[in-house]
Image (cartoon, rainbow, N blue to C red; front, top):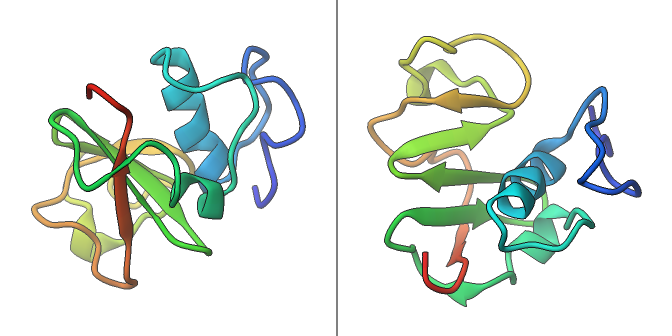
Length: 114
C-alpha cells in the first residue's frame, strides 16, 4: 500500500505497509531505528555507506528493500529476482534471489555495526 505504515508509530502494527515503511519496521524492531518510518529517500541516506556484514539496505527515490543475512525483505515480487517460497506473492515478504534486483540503480547503506 503506497504510503502505508507512515505517519504512525512502528510500535503499532498497521494493516498494510509500503516498501520503505516495511524496511523501517524491520530496522525498528531490530533496535536500530526510532519508531518513525523513513521514506525510501531517507533510507538511501540512513546509516553508513556500503553493504553491511549482515544487514544491507538498498534504496533510491522510488523504492527500498533490505537484505538480512542473505535474505531479501521486499514488497516487489519479480520472478527474475525471486525463487523462494514467497515467489509471486504480493506484499512485504522474505524473498530468495541469487542477485540484487537490477531494475534500478541502488544506494547501498547499512546500520552501524551490522
